[in-house]
Image (cartoon, rainbow, N blue to C red; front, side):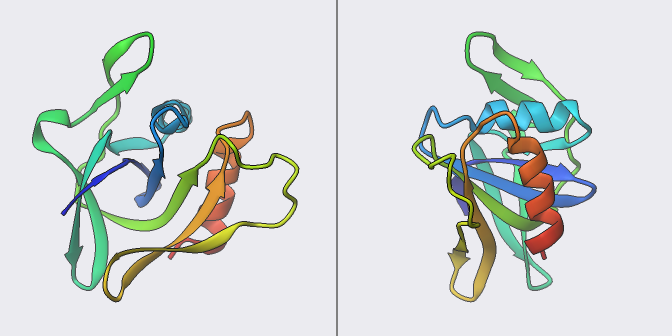
Length: 139
């Protein structure tokens, strides 16, 4: 199944970035890639179930291509998929920066197959928060 999202691999673990247009999915992906992550897919990610786990891979024509507002399509480090998905990060521009508690729930890709999901804004600390959430709640 295809899902409108962006996804990156951090140390072999997939992170789905979801949210409405303009919330910073590609921007956050670019920041994570600059720090060693690899792009799984941008705008559309192919989701499958492999050996009981959700995996993500690029749509063939978009492998290693990230769309950056104001710049256009750029080539970036690409993950060789499919990559096991570990966590979903929902980006929400209206997310209160003053929230002190984790906004943790679940994203269900198909019945019985879900990922832990956290909601963040795309502020300056977002890449570090993604890495921390992956370490704490990613499976």
